Structures are given as structure tokens and as C-alpha cells.
Image (cartoon, rainbow, N blue to C red; front, side):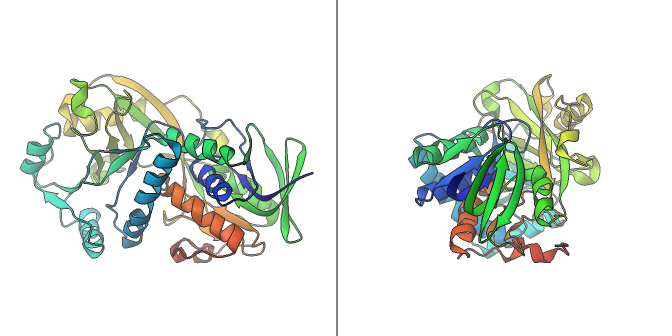
Amino acid sequence: MSTYDLIVIGAGAIGSAAAYHAARRGHSVLLLEQFEIDHQHGSSHGVSRIIRYAYDHPHYVRMSKVVYPMWRALEEDSGEQLMIASGGIDIGREHEPEIHNRVISLTAERIPFELLSTSEVLQRYPQFHLDHDQVALYQADTGVLRASHCVRAHVRLAEMRGAVVREKSHVEMISAAGDGVAVKANGEDYSAARLVLAAGGWANDLLGQVGLSLPLQVVRCQENYFAPEPAHEYEPGRFPAFIAHTQAEWGLPTYGIPSVDGSGLKVAWHGGARLGHPEESKSSPDAEVSDKARAWSKQYLPAADVALKSSRVCLYTMTPDEHFIIDRHPQNSQMVIGACCSGHAFKYSTLIGDIMVDLAMEGETSRDIDMFALSRFNVPV
């Protein structure tokens, strides 16, 4: 039986980060992934994710203050660009909560921003045509993370520091073993002092073996990429990342990311169809979802009303309050759970991974994670 200081289950954004930070601290690490590294079945694969300060809750703004330098440090460690500056806007109506609460949070944390009128948005970003009563909250530090590059950098650097990575390694069993843990994957037995579980939508499949079921809802989402012309007008520097709080008219918030590495303009919905289990998601995209994204673009980005370039399916794993779960198992404290991520944790993944290593190896963390505690849910154990 192979023995480690830490076993990490799941090599997506959170698990890969935990493996990296643990190996960087000198711990022996086993990283188990049921699919291949950077697979397309979960939540972490892809060209791009938004990184931002503009949140309606000040705690996330404070987390952003911590995580921006961490991504820059990872860039230096990896030798590649992972974060691209773009600027970003939140679109909505000034006195509605989506904008008003962001103004309060950013002001409280002394993060600079601008409120742009419809005409000011048109002057700065002529690609947009907003409604006359809409405004845009502009924050210059908003940017884009090259998602798959981030995951692969975490894994590669963990391996360079001695972590053992096992792809296509299906975890069949986890259990407490004294003060440590026992894991069986692909028929192989492993043991460790501590366990980090970052299995996304598959978390409850494993946690049920140790008497825990989390209130997680798996959601099938879809990324849609368009190819408006001229293409350079939709690249970072000329076009912002955006979140449009137009759910009253369209059912869900819409978000967009400028074209990165030739991807095309990304326009997608923050949410989608609920699933009972990740395996229920079919891999082929829905034309109806893409058509809806195109219709939204026709209204607000008229020049982007072009044929679809590509689309792909991904998953969200939602908590009831859309905040993360970062905590130790209430009965087996040697097990740490990262049950994110409600569609917005990728930007914090390198920080969350580090926090999970704190909890696993030190038993506590200096970071404020009270709002991510399991105790806020009536979780049967």
C-alpha cells in the first residue's frame, strides 16, 4: 500500500491547486483524477474564466485582493501568462440590487470603479448598445484567466515538486482509518494522513461512504463562441469581460468574455438545466441555448449577431446560497471538503486550494472562511 501525507481527489481547478500548494510546502501528495487531466466533463476545462473584484458581497472583494497576487506568483512559477487584463463591466440598472450592492462592496473595500451611462458605454465600447435606463459599472482590474492553462500549470508544478498524479483513476472507496484515511482507486489501495475532496458534482458519490450528504445541485451549462468582425474589436484591450444582469427579461444573467487565443467572443448564461447527477449531462450542445445567446447578442451587441463558431457543455455545482463549501468533515476532521463552486469559484481556485491545505495539514487557516462553513446547512451526518 502506498502512503502519502495528503491524497487529493479531483484534479479540476480546486484539486489541482490543492496538490500544487501541498507539494510546494514539501508534503508528499497523491492526486487522483477519474478522467484525464483537464477533461471536459466537469467545471474547470476551457479557454477562459472571469477574474474580478466587482462582487455584491464584500467578502469576495477581500478574497480578490488576496488572489490576484497569487495568480501573478503562479505565473512567475510557471513561466507562462495565465491572467489577461481586459477591464470589465456589470450591466444593469443603477438602483437595482445587482449594481447597487456592488457599488457598496467596492466602495467599502476601496476598489476604484466608474459608473458609466448608456452614452458613456457607447463611447468607450461602441460594440454595446444598452437600454436607455441601463448603466455599466466599470472596474479596470477585471480580467480573464486562461482556464485550462491554469489547471495544467498547477498539476505540472505539483508533479515537478514530487506529487504523484494518477489520471483515469476511479475512486471506489474512501474511509477514515484511525487518524488518517484509506482510499481505493482502480483496485489499488492508498493511505494518507489527510484527504482533500474536490470532486465537484461527484462529491456526494464519495461523501456518502463517510456518512455525509451535501445540498449540491448539478447544473448543465453551455459556453457559446461567436466570430464577429472585425475580430480584433472583441479581444482583450478593446472589449471587456461583462456580466449582464438582465435575468428579469431573459431568465438568467448573461456573461461574456473577449476572444482569447482565437476562441471567439464567449456569450453564455449563468445557469442552466438541473441534473440529478453529472452523468445525466449529454456532451452535445443544445442549439436552443446557443440561439438564445445569439438573440441576446443581437439586442445588446448588434455586430456580434453572427453564426455560431463553437459551443461546449460544462457543469456548475450549486449550493443553495451560491456560496462555497470549504470545511472539514464534521466527524472525520482528517477529511477536508471543497464543495464549490456555484459557477464562480475558478477565479479563487488557487486561494481555495491553499486554504484546503491549511485545513488538512495544519488543522486551521488564518483566512476568514466562516461564510463557507458546513454548519450553515442542516447537514445530516
